[in-house]
Amino acid sequence: MTDLTLYFCPRTRSFHALWMLEEIGEPYDLRVVNIRDDIQSEAYGAVNPMRKVPALEVDGELITESPAICAWLADRFPGKGLAPAVDAPGRGSYLRWLFFAGSAMEPAFIDKAMSRETPRQTAGWGDLATVKASLVRALDGQEYLVGDQFTAADLMVGSTLNFMMNFKLLERAEPFAAYVDRLVARPAFKRAMARETELAG
Image (cartoon, rainbow, N blue to C red; front, side, top):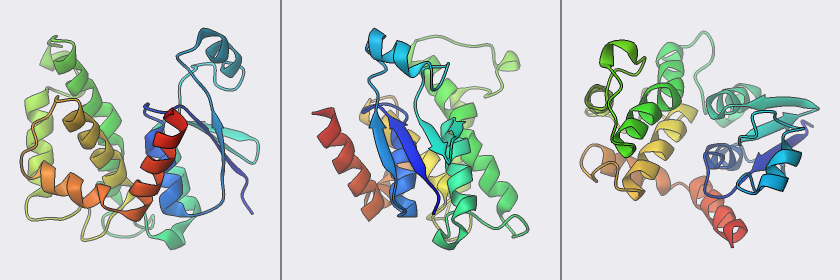
């Protein structure tokens, strides 16, 4: 059996990994780290020098970055159906959207939150308008990003959209509202949210 340990802090990006572990449905240990506390953050630096969460320890090997954790879990447990097989149609699109959340969506929304404009020609994410237009096009007439099945890419993108809507950085408009509502209705999301709420006190 694979030994899975998640380093987690409530109300942070580590929710991606917590949700993913609930989707996988395999046993895991949860180590809560308050990265907002200087002393705890300093101690956690021995695990992850970046002092960021999530971090997933797998049989002594550390995996950081939410998309990497989700990709590893989806491939390690293929029977859960959370990623197309390496040689299956849609694999490329799946990888595209899996990494789109962190590499394009998040920095574009941070620009908005900080009331700043990164020059489009120097930003790998372009700008917020282009990010949103790309997602609208991808979701046009589709329930999920890749084919007709929920994948880890939906988890990453949907979780990010949900966060942005909750913090009023994105309006609850279609197709985003229905897409997010569909995802947060999943039992695994509800379990992860209940656990986070309990841990947040």
